[in-house]
Length: 406
Image 1 (tube, rainbow, N blue to C red):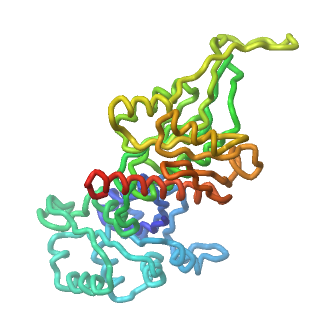
Image 2: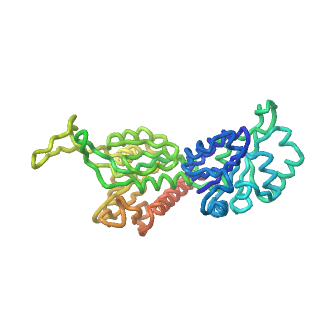
Image 3: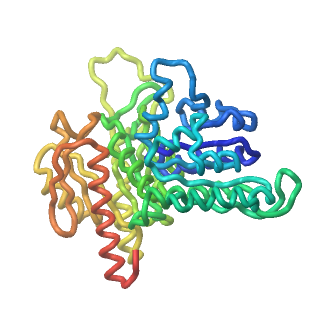
């Protein structure tokens, strides 16, 4: 979701940097809107580096559509969050004043508003400020209460900007009501593995990583605590808690197995190579012979090892595997689910030109305890949502069977 982060001129502006990063870790896109006073505390380039978006600082910035940019942004954001919110901006918003980009954005948007006030203790208690806060509360504006402690002015009392984690949690709660994935620890693998046979050449496949990355992004949007283990890919990783980059199947096996014990869900979307060279040459194998023979050996079976480990322990993370097939897709997926002791297998026909590897769309069949369910061709982002819908259903069912609430 897209959040406009308003930053105003207070010493707490430095905390807004961590707020922006925290929102990204939860899977949100952030665009920073800074008042002129805010730029005296934190430079716009800091927010640009974090958000990878142009920071808006001037309502009248030159450009073909600069004068209506606040209207365009107002119609696309899902939340307007102002942290820190000074007495000045609170007064403007309460009284409908719109003399800068941030206050104009507020009057133009219908997105919910979350304020994190920050000011001197006496200012926070002043009757005029309290009335303005009451006016905004009556309109449905929500707040993250300031904390108590030492203030920049030297006073001790209430008025210090809330901690970034608290602000991020409040924003997330507005945008994402609690669901089965919220707070769940989930590990997702993505991309190919590349198996080197000399310093230059390798054996690989056409996986782009798009499917796994889409699942990671969707899981983060649903509030999950996401770890992404990814093979080599040109994609930009989504904003998740941890990204672990690997190259070969053995390295991916180690990365997954060392973390799986702490996970509640594992989704194996990576196209892991089944075979790797027995030996890797230290130097480039010279060209010259008409043929080249490579001796290959099986790579570790990550999904199989996870399933066997779960079976031996009598419990473990919910397991989702993928099956890339070219024929008898559903039958092979069902057999794989049983053999690997997985909960779900997502099967796709990679012989199709419009689905599977290295394209933006996919069509899959999800094989689970209730049979096979085909999901028609659509974007990989939508396929990711469909997969996680099934994961959430399993979580709810298992929780009900165990007598717990999700």
